[in-house]
Image (cartoon, rainbow, N blue to C red; front, side, top):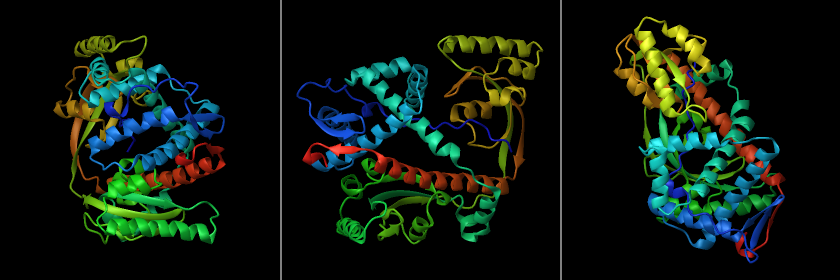
Length: 433
């Protein structure tokens, strides 16, 4: 079955993750770290500190001492700065239009128009320009990771076959775990003394948790994982996305339990199982064969103009013109336009919610009104529906997706570690180390 390109890696930023832009660097603003040919200043770090503490309040994470949080934040800022530098060196650019589209998506998730969203930021006393810069950096890093990691990962049929040959893998391919994670890393080519020191740190952290310490606060304080500032929360992960080392521990755990110390190639891990869900899915599903015409708002075509154009195309179809011909001539979804807008047979959950909700309400051959989604505005027509047993197809698709995610995660961690090790970083304040 053809893959439908209706997946969006949307930016999960809330309005309170932006704040007033820090004061411009002054003569007395201290430089606290040098990162290659760039610097991080005390005001920048304090700016991030204030925002993070606000976010912790919203997420009900106990805030560690400022000295601990500053150290964690500084390391995160160093990693971000290195990635942004590489993106600039290799020609990655983010246009104002890219930023606007991302903000439209965030506003829609908050059930607002972009205009109302900007007003909400202003009411919170947040600087719109600073918020836009944060979004631009997020998009830049995402594009860098797509190019350096995601687009270079392939999954062969033989890998899927080997994965599904394992009975335990087949049984858990639809199983998901919500986990939190603490990671204590060891350097590449670490000496026995460095490994032992990392192990002792992991043991001390585990002792704290065993004595009732708060996992989220402990993760913020001690973890070197990417998710440390989220209290170690990895969110929901399919079983096949996780290393076998994690799965072996999770299979024996109940929600709320904490694992022992797990030794991996790059360091030591401690897991908390928050919840689990899912299991075998063999029931047939209702598939829909659907086609659409997509128009994207842009600097030369407003949202209202796109909707009006689709209304005219809708009228022409109702008057007897062929949908396929008009889709080939007008649709801006290049993947489907050459097929007359036909997206083929799609499964529940395969399309973005805004599109799917309207599609599900249509009868065969019925035309929708112009429908907004993160991709633009659509004119949708359902061709037919069927009940279909896709258990085997779904099993292989899920297995392939999970193998890809696991390989990408492993590659990302290795790539980021090498990037950090190869960068020139100098700490200029003792309390920043």
